[in-house]
Image (cartoon, rainbow, N blue to C red):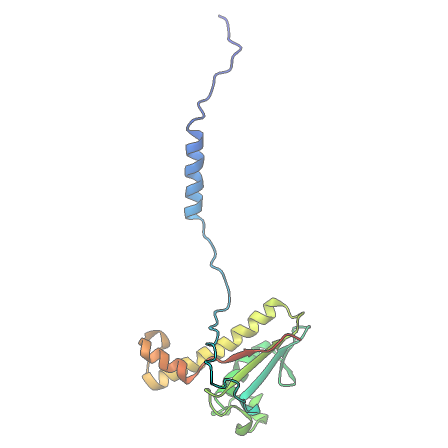
Length: 185
């Protein structure tokens, strides 16, 4: 018997189909992570003929800054990130229950008049880490969430996720999220 020196050919016509099906399979089954970010609603444009530059009383303004070393300062005092949520809550709610140890040095007249007039001003250094900036934003968001949740329980005897659209809007109106981001130092 004599052997042929020719190699047998493999039909590669269906290889492209198989590769395409595998590609589709992996695209469909792969977990695509959701984008993370900060959801903020920008204020509406100021209508013509109306003065939108209203003056804010100093005691209605909570100044928070993050320096280049990622240290958080409230007014002129360096604080820990774990304290920020409670400080913001007490400032917004005027320390009504007196539970804020940081706020105990303040008189109620030095805290915001009410949540609708309160403004939190956040300023960061251009060398502040992105992670620290996000952590501060998260703590401020948690403060508003806690206040809104407590309000929903007191007024409607419900959790925020159980509220109707109108009730949820009433809660948001009672504690409007007002955050002013000052220019970077």
